[in-house]
Length: 201
Image (tube, rainbow, N blue to C red; front, side, top):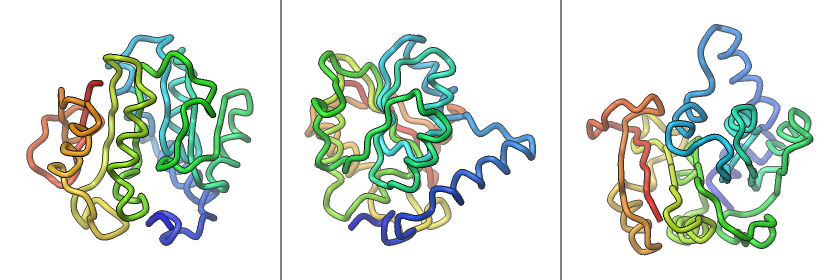
């Protein structure tokens, strides 16, 4: 069982969506991840939203002209995503067992984005496998972007993965670090408790 399932019981989709809706209504911009992704690849690029949740990032990227596919294990989150954007392709799958063929992918993705603390919320011991599976969905030269917390202040669960470990998993999967930031607004990384990492295949 993933740490996410232990935390939520797989029933948090509506509450999760409501929290971000409230942020948007208060005037905050809920689209930092999508805006960041749009600086990395041009409109029309193929994007995999790995751990897409309720679809907040992917729906915005689709609105910006990206060719998107979303994958998540949590049925309650996907139910919200499908209701909000029924025209987009949403798949229920475990990232540790992800098969690109099941997504209808032949040429590979230009960008894979894993936002929302995906890696710290995986099932313990599957982190390297998930990196490998996501790397396998990339076209040559494609990018993997992951943002996640590194300490208790930035996570709903105890910290479980360090940047050194994540970089090692990426290297083992044939990925090279090209940039790292402290936020999705591209502030320089300062050894703080949250990092957005960009690796190239």
